[in-house]
Amino acid sequence: MKVELVGTGAIYTKYNSACTLVNEELIIDMPNGTLKQLLKSNHKPEKIKAILITHMHGDHIADIPFFLKHVFNYIKIDNEITIIGPTGIEDKIVELFEAYRFEDREEIQEFMNIKFIELNEEEKQIEVENYKVNAIQVSHGAEKPAYGYTINNTISCTGDSGICENIEKLIKNSKVTIADTSLREGDHCHMGIDNIKYLAEKYNKQIIATHLRDTTREELSKQEYKNILVVEDGYKFEI
Ligand SMILES: [Zn+2]
Ligand SMILES: [Zn+2]
Image 1: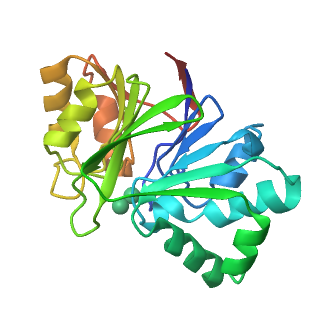
Image 2: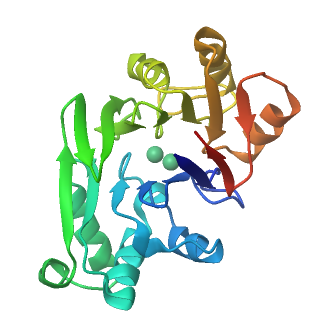
């Protein structure tokens, strides 16, 4: 699998917010600016077949209407796009279109070929475009449900989450985990350097920090943990 961290930052940073592209076909979250970032990096957004949404905060979903308009109205693809996300994701995306004064629900249904898969269970396996996606609920304070995803038992994205049992499961079930490391010290909404260090030591697996606040990035970059990576936007690897 070819993986690219399109964004590694958090809301108030110069970095794109956390967003990961897999084989140009799956994308995990679509923060503000994602479409333009994909175009700037010479990706073809129309190759994306599925969007996996971790939760409905703006820094994870804001660009979905811009992306859908690009592929369906401008490129005019005729294939289906699957959107997987927490229960209510379809209504939330329609609301975004309305807020941006773009298409209404009927126009979206008529002109855009979207299959929504809404999640409410603690854990669910989904087959999408020959990928085995495992969605598992994580812990993001009042924002419920929020999900982390594992793809082909190889890479995991935690989404925004405090440390919890299911975060440990995501790490156990994959080779590399792209993990929310917003804070210096984790809380019930986001993990911190303390949590990531604990997980890296306990499981001895590769963790790539994402959703980094600037202060966290600075502190984590200065320290050398053997299996924790701090990377720039656009970092690519193959696994
Ligand atoms: Zn969030
Ligand atoms: Zn976030």
